[in-house]
Length: 504
Image 1 (cartoon, rainbow, N blue to C red):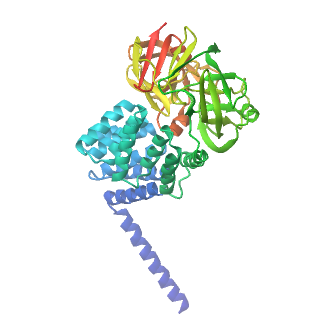
Image 2: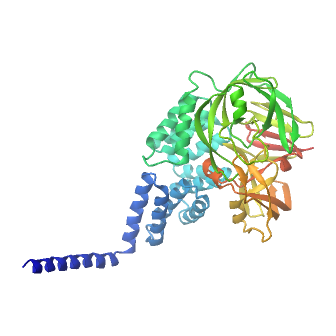
């Protein structure tokens, strides 16, 4: 009896299992797509962005016509989270073509334009979305970033707060509020906004942006009652002029830290902070507060560095107190020269004029609006950038980098214009703030245009800029350094968001 009963039970199990298989085979595609959509949204909410992207991609393949928009929107949102900027842009272009009058779709398309580094185009699209839906939170959030990039900080804060009132649990808006407060030098308020951002993160979110925010909160709160970038003496209308010299195509000035002796600093507008080497920091009593993440050109990619505070920084007759800085600790190995100290007037909150003919730099909160031979719209979103046209078809943003030497494009830009690595590649020894870029090469025959400035059939250096782009949150298309800038009297005017170039 036992044996017979067992055989019957086993047969029943087989029959039930078979029925599940048959059921699965006849599940409509639309139902399968719905399952993938649910998974995509759940993974997105949990901070599992790569898994979310995979689920939304599968949903898009299986989607019925009425599911396509939701699936494609999910692909774009997840792609933006994992710095798949090209994918997000391609899908957003398709999405907006199918739904050109949807304010949500237009705002999402604007987000994709923003992360492509096309800040002006994104701003116009955010305004288009708000014209259709005046209370659209993502539209106001986009305008907040756009105004901040033009140094219109009160207007940016108004837009960000308006977005928060509509979508108080949108963690990205809280992060943007933090960055605006930080630009305003209101560090306690900035720390509070970043705390709101971190508290809204899924428990599984261990992204670089999340780690950076946690370190930033600790750093900002370390200032206590100190006023960051405190200016003494002087006023917002005062101008400061200092001499510089060029060494190996780098601009060198003399500056003093913590009442020490004057020493050389590279003027590096391609950096977000004043930077000290470890020996200099130790010698001058600059004590690290916490660690942060940095990224630049080089094979190290993401690099852990120390955040610290300089008590006093003197540059000519300018004296600032409580200046945030990075300490390059641990230092890079296997590079041909030591890492130098650097500073950027832009990071200190000043506009600047750098005259390569007279070898003088003038900077202040406001600089004279001199007439230039060329004027390019400028955006300061973490770094100062201008838009260039590559091979007549591809728009890309270029970092204005006085610390750089050549004109370069990213690998992503080279791919976008259909340029392959030459069979006989001209290898270059290129090193940046993250070490050697061993894959850098010289690409001849590229056409570049910056407004009315043209470089035809021009050789550019191709760099791997994927890691810095991911950390910055937008696709860096290239860099213009000494070879581009040194022909001009260069005005970087943050107040009017313009790069002025007067030929010398």
